[in-house]
Image (tube, rainbow over all chains, first blue to last red; front, side):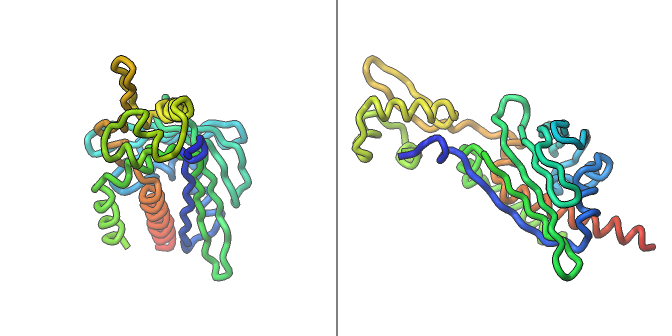
Length: 146
Length: 91
C-alpha cells in the first residue's frame, strides 16, 4: 500500500569539476554568474536574485525557447561557505516546496565534487518524466558540448 | 494502484480487490492521491470511477519532468562556465 512518503522522490547527482570549492560556491551564489551558467543549455537565465543568509530568499527566472518564463524560488536554510548550501525549491507559486542541498567537496587532486541532493519531489514529476521524449535532446546536447 | 490506473480508469471496487483492502480504506487512499493531483475521481450515482490525471505538459513542465537530466545538464553548464571563465582570465 502506498503512503504519503511514497508520493515523494529523492535524487542524488554528483559531478567532479576541475575548479576549487570557493570558485564553484561563488558561481552558485552570485547573481551575475548564475545568469551566465544556470540551467540546461536550452534555457536562458533572465534574472537571478540571491539574498545569501539563512532565511534569505532567492529567485531565478528561466526563459524557454517558446518565450515562456518559469520562476524557481525559495529560502536558504543552511549556508556553510564554501562547503554547503541547503535551500527550499518552489516552481512557480502554487507548487509544493521541495528541498535542495548542494555540497562542494575538495578531492585529493585539486578538483571538487559537487553533489546535489534534491528531496521532497512529488512523484507526479518523476512519473511524467518517463513519458517524455525531450530528454534525449538534452543528452545529445551534453555529449556535443563535452 | 497507480500502475493499475495507468492501464485505464477503474472503479473503486476494482482497485480494492488486488490489495485486499476495504472500500473505505481505498477511498481514503484515493483522497490522498487526489490531493497530490495524481488521480481524478468522477461519481455517477454510487459508482466512483478513478483515472490518472494526464494533462498536456507545458515546455516548462517537460523541462523539469526529470530532475536527474535537469541537474546533470545544469552541472555540465557549471563546469563549462568555470572552465571558460578561468581560461579567459589566464589569457
